[in-house]
Length: 152
Image 1 (cartoon, rainbow, N blue to C red):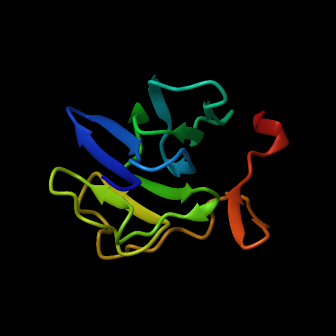
Image 2: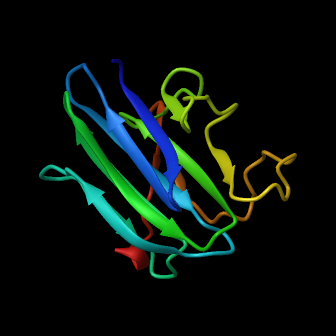
């Protein structure tokens, strides 16, 4: 199994898992709940140096997992009707067609970042809102999600 993200919802709990059969990879990202908040966040098998942080307004989850031939992840519930995901592997955007698997059937999003909707409302608009207030900083060829000082 190559490096990948798996994202799915089960019994109103969202689950994100990272895995790789290769040497250690850093999976990181930001999940944004625009009009809602995140609740009941639980981590799955994190290692030293890994983290999951909830923003002060409870609208953003920042995470970073160093995954090595195992599975790391998090579970959460949310009151949001849609979620925006920004996913990275080793400080580069995860490839939507090769490294991100959604739902029971493992479908791939068209883009990264991508949206997941809890209702049929606005499903025809798969674009990520421009008002996300997620800072992305270039780091050489890479782009990394930056946790604002106020959230640390």
